[in-house]
Amino acid sequence: MSWTDERVELLKKMWSDGQSASQIAKELGGVTRNAVIGKVHRLGLSNRTNGAPVPPGKTEEIKEKPAAAAAAPAAKTDAKARPAPKAEAPRPAPAQPAAQAAPETKSAVPARRQIIPAGQPLPPQPSANEISPEALAKVNEIEKRAKKLTLMELTERTCKWPVGDPATPDFWFCGLPVQAGKPYCDAHVGVAFQPMSARRDRKR
DNA sequence: CCCTGATTCGC
DNA sequence: GCGAATCAGG
Image (cartoon, rainbow, N blue to C red; front, side, top):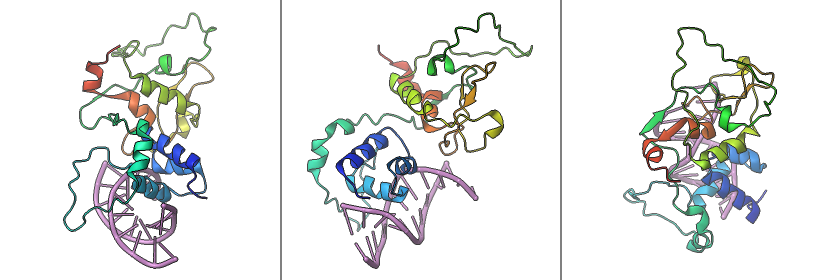
């Protein structure tokens, strides 16, 4: 397989979407994650935060076309402000994230009062959220591709984001590969953890 | 052990 | 330019 314009474009899109190199490699097919990473570097898409502390001796060798970068400025709108580094404001594992994440057709679930184990205040329950539309869009996108695992199928490395109504037959867990260390896949980490700043000045 | 991206270097 | 092997890390 070679890097056709289409493949490169998909690579760029997915990379800027925060997809991992391995996921991109799978999607593209015919390439390994190493190939993807190598390409990403050659395209100069790697650094998000770059003060360019060029290490001694290794004067960079960016021989790649600045033309390409100029040709597709859309993708590098330095809107890289995504994954919230330190200042995370974790939300408790949502009980019904599906409320806004997955519409579902639950018109036939009328008088189902939530059964609370008594003694469990069932606190936060952030009402209709203020989650970035981008993050939600990403979630909706990946949930179509979710592996839809059952509780017993979850492992330490499968996304534990619940989707749907637990009291319903079609209730499942995302199941996509989790982000290193986190309990959710990157898309769900995006809605589960919000940068404090982003939560503050969420205009519109 | 699973995964992540980063780098090197022969091709 | 490409990407496997390797490295460094969560």
